[in-house]
Image (cartoon, helix red, strand yellow):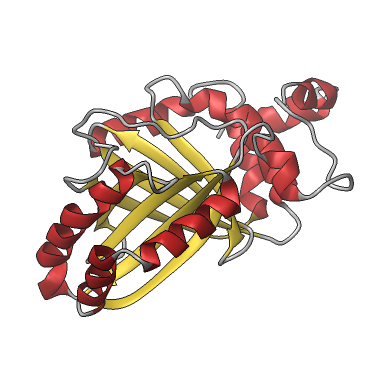
Length: 257
């Protein structure tokens, strides 16, 4: 981290720094969700974390490959499978699924009600339950300044970086990252950015794609060569209570390869 950037910032650069924000928001005027999301859209995301019995992981993946793509492809269900992965580094024997519901909470409710009538899905859930040790999920919204996740060709590895923020700091985080994201677009590594609405609150997830671990290292190191990235890190680190990183491998059913 450069030693002289703090002095530069203090010497009359405050207004310049704030002017670079894509969207400056006032937390007193609206909810975090309305201030930080794409208001013209109403996408809702669900992220699922399934901790699988180690001896069942291959069978679990096969079961998901047989069922999840059919739901994704069926227009009867207003939802899309964004990506599905196994954790490579981080929590072992874990599957991560990311779904998008175009239409927000009504679309989520519609899908849930329709799946209750789907005998194949009911059988899938019953068989899946035999393979799991635990599971949890969160409902998420996407930040307005991030890319919307779209299918991409592989092979890639994916990093899910999760940040537990201090309560009351989500707007501040959004303002800094509205500027920071432009430093991380050069290699198309930015896939999606989300914040929680239900589940663990004040939780942020950033999803990145890299060709391999070395390209991840090179890309992250390259960000530090860009003027301004060090300032963003300096001011966002104090907002974090806890952070976690998963390196994930796409499964055969994943649209994000």
